[in-house]
Image (spheres, rainbow, N blue to C red):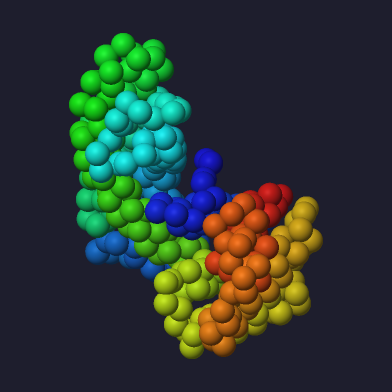
Length: 331
């Protein structure tokens, strides 16, 4: 599977879903006879690994649906908004440059995946409802985007004075708003479900192999995501962030001494882990000390160089994404 690495509505799917790939890291994957029940279900206990496998299968379908559609739809809408001067009123016909949109697809495949996932255990009403709403938002929006794309790509706006473009604007915006809300809710629900799977897998890893290198690898990624959640809030909880940073540093220190063979490119992962920790502490300190940005730092914010500003959310995000990529490159 492929996953996005952006930190935006839906971005947490990138960060959290990528951690699922870590289940392949341990070299020994013996079946467990644990007594944990499948997440989200009630009834007789089942082996933990079986519960993980079932939840993994269900989430893979949902994540595939999300990845198949969300980024391409967002990209098309962003292209449209880049040249329409006023999204409240729509195109006027006086725009200097008309970029149109990008055609999209994936609505039908996503709907099929959602229906298939619904029939799989465990039952997860919140996730299933969010997935259904997301899939339902895609069909109408896909049709409108592609109709508008054909219209602008054919330069037909030059022949009808933007008449059709103006008529398509209102349904396009309304459908886009419905999609955006559904995307965020689906992303959040997937993230919550993925947390359950990660914790179940972490517990099984500790039971089977102890606190070894693969265990600390997964733990470090889980803790990094939790730290991101705290530090990327509009108002950072300083005490909570400090607690998360301390736990993360403790894991890094214990990981250095943990038994286990280091996979290829482990050094790159460790370097990115340290870079992320440093960026997290920089942002935490800036928030703790209420340090304002200097004029030169302000000039970089909102530009492609904003990640160079010490203690900025953009620097933290860049280092987090680099760490995720390094983690996924391990073999």
